[in-house]
Length: 141
Figure 1 (tube, helix red, strand yellow):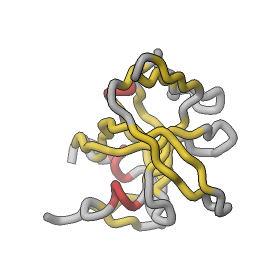
Figure 2 (cartoon, helix red, strand yellow; figure 1 turned 30 degrees about the vertical axis):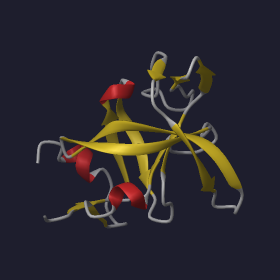
Figure 3 (tube, rainbow, N blue to C red; figure 1 turned 90 degrees about the vertical axis):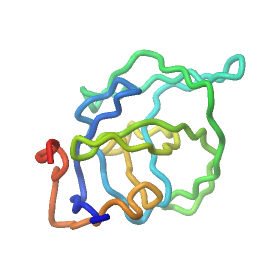
């Protein structure tokens, strides 16, 4: 299987989360992928999440309920360990739907509401840091 080349940033869709044209940063320094989640509530064995951000107008969805989710420890770039919720969802790159694991994090103060890490990129993509929005501009290829 030939790996597709992607750039350092892109725009993707998360159909199950009702999010379209979301700015993502491709982060080869991160193992896991993370998505901004503004509200998280655990209730009756379900996770109720709201994906909304003032700084990102496309980042608005109603409450999404996850029946299955886990917890994982994530070490941030500043070295601190944080226990986060982890969900499985779908992401669209180059018009193709892929499964992705996402940790839920508060990223309101970050430029990008989503980081795509090595766990997802591995065996699928090569990153060219000189490129941007390759998937978004070639979503039918």
